[in-house]
Image 1 (tube, rainbow, N blue to C red):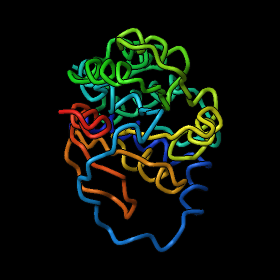
Image 2: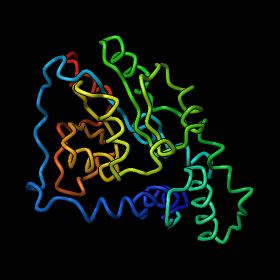
Image 3: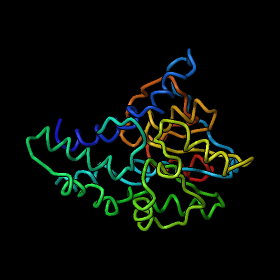
Length: 243
């Protein structure tokens, strides 16, 4: 495993180690349905009023961002995502016998604003906006880091829910509970790349979820997304019924 892959795994694994995420794991329903995905079913127009997105990995190419930055932590409670990135960078440095002190290890968080959107992101978001959908973001990130990222996205989101706001990281359910408070009675679809951090908790809460499986990974659990797509172009076509 190279340094980019190791760092990626460290940041991803963080969410599974926090106490609220461990509680989520232990409280899950059992048994779940058989481990198979539903067929690609055409979506009727205007089924949903609101679409929320995970940000990093779904809208933003964070693997490319980490790769550019390069060329976690087991916590008892919530810590800012900036610190998660800093300590993840330090963990990678230690693994590679490359000493990175805490002051220098902030380079990863500092680079986040430059992580690029996927090539299909802005066009897809713009098309959804033109079609009249409200858009939101549910992200495991700090307010200031997300604000910097939003400058690279070409639409204005109707609301965002961050880890800093809810003092928790997905797959714990606080992001989704807060979004449900905001959404109210409106029909809502969540779209995300991460099976563990988004698809599973959304499914557990009965929230329709679209799996944006950009890297064509196999499902890791028996959760059932409403649809699986490999790009946001496919997601837009499915949601709007337009090709």
